[in-house]
Amino acid sequence: MTLPEAVGELVLRGRVMPASNATFICQLGELQVVYKPVRGEQPLWDFPDGTLAEREYAAYLVSEALGWDVVPPTVLRDGPHGVGMVQEWKEPDPALAPVDIVARGELPEGFLHVFDAEDGAGRPVALVHEESEPLRRMAIFDAVINNGDRKGGHVLAMADGHRYGVDHGVAFHVEPKLRTVLWGWAAEPLRADEIAAVRRLADDGELRERLFELLTVSEVEQFGVRCRELVADGVFPLPDGSWPAIPWPAF
Image (cartoon, rainbow, N blue to C red; front, side, top):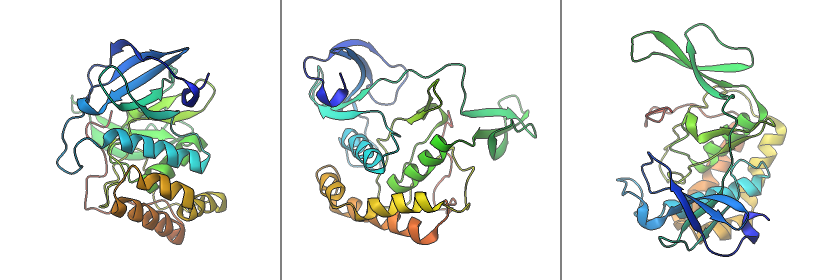
C-alpha cells in the first residue's frame, strides 16, 4: 500500500515532542504516517496563517515533478484534528549523520565544509555535510522552493544511501528566504542534467496549475522566476545577505 492509495481512519499513536507545530504519529492502514493538522500550526509573521500544510504538499509536488524523490509521499486529508498534511513516515538510520558538527579542521572524507563556529563550551567546530548525490539534489530542490528551514534534523538518512527532506512548511515565499545547512556547493556549476531538470520545472504547466490550488498567484509566479534564474545562472546559489543563511537552531 502506498500513501496516495491509503484510505480510512487516521489512528493517533503519539505526538512528536518538541515541535513548533502540532505533529502526530498516526497509523493509516498498513502505513505509519506523520500528521500535521492546520489547526495546530503556530502563526508566523512572514507567512499567511493556516497555509503550512498546503506548502508541504506543494513541496512534494515539486519533488515528484523533478523525479528526485526528495520528499516522502504526502497528501492533504482530514484527520482526528481536522484537515492537515499527512506524510509517509521514513525511519532514518541512527548510525548515519549526513549533516554533522566536527572539530574545526577535521573534515571527514566525503564531506563538504559549510562554516566554522564555536560550540556551547567555546570549542572550535565546523558544520559539514555529505558530498552525495541525494544531498546535492536536495540543495537544488531547496533553492527552487525557497526553503526557509533546512535544518540538519530535516535530512533523513536511509540505510540504502537515499536521503529524504522533510518539514517544508516555510517555503515558496516571494521574497528570498533560503536558509539551509547545505551550502557546501555554493557557487559551484550545475551539471547539464540538473539544469535540464530545473528547466522542466519552469515549463511544467500541469505542476503550475496544481500549485495555483495551494499557493498565491505571486508565489507560483515567483517559483517560476527562481527556476529560470537558476537555469540562467547555471550555478548553486550563494547567500545574498538579505536573510540569515543558516536556520536557527541548525539542528
